[in-house]
Length: 172
Image (spheres, rainbow, N blue to C red):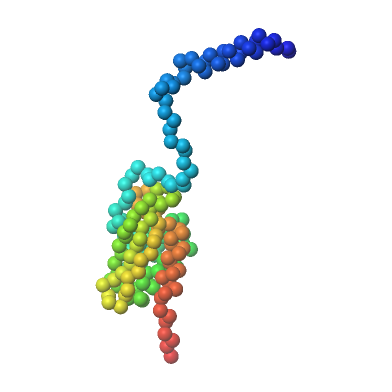
């Protein structure tokens, strides 16, 4: 098929006419917007941050030796029965190191890089004079109507506290 210069010219004229006609916005009011940014910040979710006591309670329940270990698995993100020994050791190690009665506080709450996750600086302490409180940054993930300690935080914290447990003294 052969195109004639008149047809090509009329097509160009038609496109130019639409581009210059009233189909576009008013050039006087159109202001260029700010250039797009390439930050990796995550916009915070619409919901407010949880109360610090809610996150502290998750850690308190994980550490409380009076709570059956089977009930603690649900407090860990992707928790399974394979986590039960570490959860049992966590509470026992804290008690063996003088963290009874146990106190847990959460401060500096902020939205995390993962959507809807929250970070907090959690301090575990006791009124017992021998137990020096320690703080650890932790991340929490929402689940239905509650919160869980993220798998990453649990994998860092649980072995750390269990390893700090005093060795049993040999008897005999």
